[in-house]
Amino acid sequence: MFAATVPLLVPAIREFHALHPATEVEVIAAQQSVIHRSLLEGGVDLGLVNYLEGDDLAPDLHTTELLRGRPVVCLRPDSPLASLESVGVDDLLREPLIVMRSGYLMHRFTHRLLKGRVPSFSYSADGAEMGKLMVAEGLGVTVLPDYSVVGDPLERTGAITCRPLAGDSTTVLLVVQRSRSGSVTRAARDLHRIFVERAEAHRTVPPAGPAPSPAAPASPDP
Image (cartoon, rainbow, N blue to C red; front, side, top):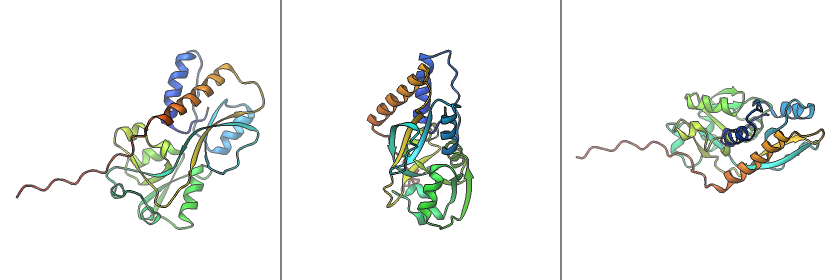
Protein backbone atom coordinates (compact mmCIF):
# COMPACT_ATOMS: atom_id res chain seq x y z
CA MET A 1 0.00 0.00 0.00
CA PHE A 2 1.17 3.52 -0.75
CA ALA A 3 0.55 6.20 1.85
CA ALA A 4 -0.24 9.90 1.60
CA THR A 5 -1.15 11.26 5.01
CA VAL A 6 -0.30 10.17 8.56
CA PRO A 7 -3.44 11.42 10.42
CA LEU A 8 -5.64 9.09 8.34
CA LEU A 9 -3.15 6.30 7.72
CA VAL A 10 -2.01 5.47 11.26
CA PRO A 11 -5.47 4.98 12.85
CA ALA A 12 -6.57 2.92 9.83
CA ILE A 13 -3.53 0.62 10.07
CA ARG A 14 -4.08 0.22 13.81
CA GLU A 15 -7.71 -0.80 13.27
CA PHE A 16 -6.78 -3.11 10.40
CA HIS A 17 -4.13 -4.86 12.51
CA ALA A 18 -6.72 -5.60 15.20
CA LEU A 19 -8.91 -7.21 12.52
CA HIS A 20 -6.12 -9.03 10.64
CA PRO A 21 -3.27 -9.53 13.16
CA ALA A 22 -1.46 -12.05 10.93
CA THR A 23 -1.52 -9.89 7.78
CA GLU A 24 1.60 -7.86 7.03
CA VAL A 25 1.07 -4.30 5.82
CA GLU A 26 3.76 -2.62 3.73
CA VAL A 27 3.57 1.19 3.58
CA ILE A 28 5.54 2.94 0.84
CA ALA A 29 5.77 6.62 -0.11
CA ALA A 30 5.96 7.22 -3.86
CA GLN A 31 5.05 9.54 -6.70
CA GLN A 32 1.65 9.30 -8.35
CA SER A 33 2.89 7.61 -11.53
CA VAL A 34 4.64 4.90 -9.49
CA ILE A 35 1.50 4.32 -7.43
CA HIS A 36 -0.65 3.91 -10.54
CA ARG A 37 1.80 1.54 -12.21
CA SER A 38 2.13 -0.60 -9.08
CA LEU A 39 -1.65 -0.83 -8.69
CA LEU A 40 -2.10 -1.91 -12.31
CA GLU A 41 0.75 -4.43 -12.11
CA GLY A 42 -0.55 -5.90 -8.87
CA GLY A 43 2.45 -4.83 -6.81
CA VAL A 44 0.22 -3.14 -4.23
CA ASP A 45 -3.45 -3.47 -3.29
CA LEU A 46 -4.35 0.13 -2.42
CA GLY A 47 -2.96 3.59 -3.04
CA LEU A 48 -3.67 6.89 -1.31
CA VAL A 49 -3.30 9.64 -3.90
CA ASN A 50 -3.77 13.42 -3.95
CA TYR A 51 -5.55 15.16 -6.84
CA LEU A 52 -6.49 18.75 -7.58
CA GLU A 53 -10.23 19.17 -8.05
CA GLY A 54 -10.94 18.90 -11.77
CA ASP A 55 -7.98 16.62 -12.54
CA ASP A 56 -8.73 13.61 -14.74
CA LEU A 57 -8.84 10.37 -12.75
CA ALA A 58 -7.16 7.19 -14.00
CA PRO A 59 -9.96 5.30 -15.84
CA ASP A 60 -8.50 1.86 -15.13
CA LEU A 61 -8.48 2.41 -11.36
CA HIS A 62 -11.43 2.37 -8.97
CA THR A 63 -11.33 5.67 -7.06
CA THR A 64 -13.08 6.63 -3.81
CA GLU A 65 -12.80 10.15 -2.41
CA LEU A 66 -11.72 10.29 1.23
CA LEU A 67 -10.89 13.89 2.15
CA ARG A 68 -11.11 17.40 0.73
CA GLY A 69 -8.81 20.19 1.79
CA ARG A 70 -6.86 23.28 0.81
CA PRO A 71 -3.18 23.83 0.11
CA VAL A 72 -1.55 25.55 3.10
CA VAL A 73 1.88 26.81 4.04
CA CYS A 74 3.51 24.44 6.53
CA LEU A 75 5.95 26.27 8.80
CA ARG A 76 7.39 26.39 12.29
CA PRO A 77 5.38 28.29 14.93
CA ASP A 78 8.36 30.65 15.41
CA SER A 79 8.60 31.47 11.69
CA PRO A 80 8.03 35.15 10.82
CA LEU A 81 5.20 33.98 8.54
CA ALA A 82 3.35 32.42 11.49
CA SER A 83 2.33 35.91 12.64
CA LEU A 84 0.30 36.33 9.42
CA GLU A 85 -3.35 35.28 9.10
CA SER A 86 -2.59 34.11 5.55
CA VAL A 87 0.57 33.87 3.47
CA GLY A 88 0.89 35.48 0.05
CA VAL A 89 3.21 34.47 -2.76
CA ASP A 90 5.50 37.44 -2.07
CA ASP A 91 5.83 36.31 1.57
CA LEU A 92 6.55 32.76 0.45
CA LEU A 93 9.29 33.82 -1.94
CA ARG A 94 11.22 35.58 0.83
CA GLU A 95 11.65 32.32 2.77
CA PRO A 96 13.67 29.19 1.96
CA LEU A 97 11.10 27.00 0.20
CA ILE A 98 10.96 23.21 0.42
CA VAL A 99 9.40 21.98 -2.83
CA MET A 100 8.22 18.44 -3.47
CA ARG A 101 10.09 16.57 -6.19
CA SER A 102 8.69 16.43 -9.71
CA GLY A 103 5.95 13.81 -9.92
CA TYR A 104 4.23 14.81 -6.68
CA LEU A 105 1.00 16.78 -6.90
CA MET A 106 2.24 19.60 -4.68
CA HIS A 107 5.25 20.10 -6.97
CA ARG A 108 2.85 20.87 -9.81
CA PHE A 109 0.66 23.06 -7.61
CA THR A 110 3.58 25.06 -6.16
CA HIS A 111 5.01 25.80 -9.60
CA ARG A 112 1.57 26.91 -10.77
CA LEU A 113 1.24 29.11 -7.68
CA LEU A 114 4.62 30.80 -8.18
CA LYS A 115 4.02 31.39 -11.93
CA GLY A 116 7.70 31.13 -12.78
CA ARG A 117 8.95 33.26 -9.90
CA VAL A 118 11.93 31.91 -7.95
CA PRO A 119 12.18 31.74 -4.13
CA SER A 120 15.18 33.12 -2.24
CA PHE A 121 16.43 29.54 -1.76
CA SER A 122 14.84 26.16 -2.31
CA TYR A 123 15.21 22.51 -1.33
CA SER A 124 13.69 19.44 -2.95
CA ALA A 125 11.90 16.87 -0.76
CA ASP A 126 10.77 13.34 -1.56
CA GLY A 127 7.21 13.48 -0.23
CA ALA A 128 5.20 15.27 2.44
CA GLU A 129 6.67 13.44 5.43
CA MET A 130 10.23 14.44 4.53
CA GLY A 131 9.03 17.97 3.82
CA LYS A 132 7.44 18.26 7.27
CA LEU A 133 10.59 16.98 8.97
CA MET A 134 12.67 19.57 7.13
CA VAL A 135 10.25 22.31 8.21
CA ALA A 136 10.40 21.11 11.83
CA GLU A 137 14.20 21.31 11.70
CA GLY A 138 14.03 24.94 10.61
CA LEU A 139 15.20 24.53 7.01
CA GLY A 140 12.30 26.46 5.49
CA VAL A 141 8.59 26.31 4.69
CA THR A 142 6.62 24.09 2.33
CA VAL A 143 3.18 23.89 0.71
CA LEU A 144 1.02 20.85 1.52
CA PRO A 145 -2.66 19.90 1.76
CA ASP A 146 -4.07 20.95 5.13
CA TYR A 147 -5.08 17.37 5.95
CA SER A 148 -1.40 16.37 5.72
CA VAL A 149 -0.48 18.89 8.41
CA VAL A 150 -3.37 19.27 10.88
CA GLY A 151 -3.31 16.29 13.25
CA ASP A 152 0.20 15.21 12.26
CA PRO A 153 2.35 14.23 15.28
CA LEU A 154 4.71 17.12 14.50
CA GLU A 155 1.77 19.54 14.49
CA ARG A 156 0.30 18.11 17.70
CA THR A 157 3.61 18.58 19.52
CA GLY A 158 4.02 22.15 18.27
CA ALA A 159 6.98 21.52 15.96
CA ILE A 160 5.05 22.67 12.87
CA THR A 161 1.86 24.58 12.12
CA CYS A 162 0.18 25.95 9.00
CA ARG A 163 -1.33 29.09 7.51
CA PRO A 164 -3.70 29.42 4.53
CA LEU A 165 -2.52 30.76 1.19
CA ALA A 166 -3.81 34.27 0.56
CA GLY A 167 -6.18 34.54 -2.39
CA ASP A 168 -6.14 30.83 -3.22
CA SER A 169 -9.30 28.70 -3.37
CA THR A 170 -7.83 25.48 -4.77
CA THR A 171 -9.37 22.24 -3.52
CA VAL A 172 -7.16 19.18 -3.00
CA LEU A 173 -8.64 15.69 -2.84
CA LEU A 174 -7.28 12.61 -1.11
CA VAL A 175 -8.57 9.41 -2.71
CA VAL A 176 -8.01 5.70 -2.23
CA GLN A 177 -7.50 3.72 -5.43
CA ARG A 178 -7.35 0.07 -6.44
CA SER A 179 -7.18 -1.73 -9.77
CA ARG A 180 -10.46 -2.47 -11.55
CA SER A 181 -9.08 -5.77 -12.84
CA GLY A 182 -8.21 -8.88 -10.87
CA SER A 183 -9.61 -10.20 -7.63
CA VAL A 184 -9.58 -8.21 -4.40
CA THR A 185 -8.55 -10.00 -1.22
CA ARG A 186 -10.69 -9.83 1.89
CA ALA A 187 -7.89 -8.00 3.69
CA ALA A 188 -7.71 -5.34 0.95
CA ARG A 189 -11.51 -4.93 1.02
CA ASP A 190 -11.45 -4.52 4.79
CA LEU A 191 -8.65 -1.96 4.66
CA HIS A 192 -10.47 -0.04 1.93
CA ARG A 193 -13.61 0.02 4.09
CA ILE A 194 -11.62 1.17 7.13
CA PHE A 195 -10.11 4.06 5.15
CA VAL A 196 -13.58 5.17 4.05
CA GLU A 197 -14.97 4.95 7.59
CA ARG A 198 -11.97 6.72 9.12
CA ALA A 199 -12.20 9.49 6.53
CA GLU A 200 -15.88 9.96 7.34
CA ALA A 201 -15.05 10.20 11.06
CA HIS A 202 -12.22 12.63 10.27
CA ARG A 203 -14.60 14.89 8.33
CA THR A 204 -17.11 15.05 11.20
CA VAL A 205 -14.54 16.15 13.80
CA PRO A 206 -14.04 19.95 13.77
CA PRO A 207 -10.39 20.75 12.97
CA ALA A 208 -8.35 22.10 15.84
CA GLY A 209 -6.83 24.71 13.53
CA PRO A 210 -3.21 25.78 13.31
CA ALA A 211 -1.30 26.57 16.44
CA PRO A 212 -1.07 30.28 17.23
CA SER A 213 2.21 32.07 16.78
CA PRO A 214 4.29 32.54 19.94
CA ALA A 215 3.12 35.45 22.05
CA ALA A 216 5.40 38.42 22.48
CA PRO A 217 7.00 38.66 25.95
CA ALA A 218 5.11 40.88 28.35
CA SER A 219 6.65 44.23 29.18
CA PRO A 220 7.68 44.68 32.82
CA ASP A 221 5.49 46.90 34.96
CA PRO A 222 6.83 50.44 35.18
